[in-house]
Amino acid sequence: MRRALIPPDVKPSGRGDASKFCWQTILVLRIAATLRGELRLELSHYVEMFAALRQALAGTSFLELWGKVLVIQGPLRWNLLDADDRASQLDGIRLALDPHLKVLATGFELASPGGRGQLEMFPAQVVHSPIGPSVSRGRRRA
Image (tube, rainbow, N blue to C red; front, side, top):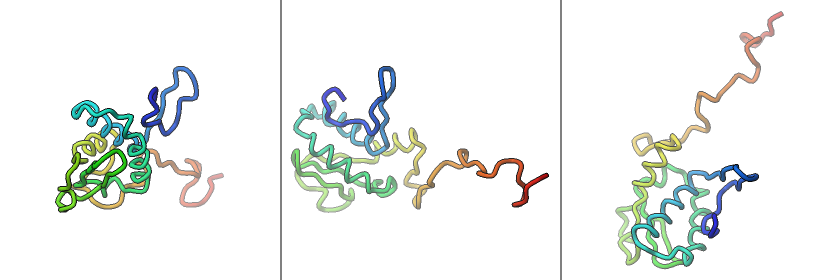
């Protein structure tokens, strides 16, 4: 946040309040951490790529990303490709997404590759009857 490389999805409302991040932003943060930590890249050159990647991920299903690689060919050139796609063998930095997705699947309780299909809209434990306990079979108790 201090460098404004990857801003939070919801900024803190005041002192002591935490920023909030969706799974897509956490994925981009993990990619940035890999580029900086393991590959020793200067991230300030990749600000536009991070923003474009966040935008692309916003319209992508979590399940759709399993088996994909991010191929970075420069600060402004990148592609999300299937790992077995011949184009994924292009020259560039090739980052497998599955290790990051495994962490997110556990932390956010998202679907893993074995559970292909549509994600649930919300966890069942947060579903409550909008009518309340005083209603039985559609009729109000007296």
